[in-house]
Amino acid sequence: MTKLEELRRELAHLPPAHPERRTAVVPAMQALQAEYGHLDDAAVAEVADLTGLSTTEVEELATFYSLIYRRPPGRHVLQVCDSVCCGLRGADRLLATAEKTNGVPLGEVTPDGALSVLPSICLGLCDRAPAALLDGEALGPLDEAALAALLGRLRGGE
Image (cartoon, rainbow, N blue to C red; front, side, top):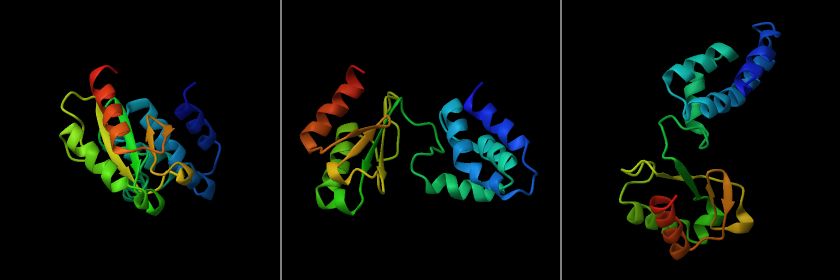
């Protein structure tokens, strides 16, 4: 049974107006993203139906959380923290290096579909600043040379 099926089963036992149904919005978005790779408009509508929120409310939450993707990402996703702590330690240089190395703006997928680099407001990795997540795995502290080498490996040899 998938995580989404488990969630549906749990929510089926709650009365429709029960407030706990709304707390399932993030797990529902995560489950659908795990299943489809991103949260398209149909998935947003499904989350709204599951949780009792409007599609607008789900869309607002989906665009707020940096770990929810509204468009298909690359095969690898690198999220570079650009919060205050990482910013003070060179996150802006890392993001510029990523753009230059990949040849596409931040948030876009490389032409080969291998990689998306996304700025993220906070990854909770202040002790590793400047930090990043690669496919959910914490990295850091990073410098421009290490980042360029990592991006080259991801684009070249996966």
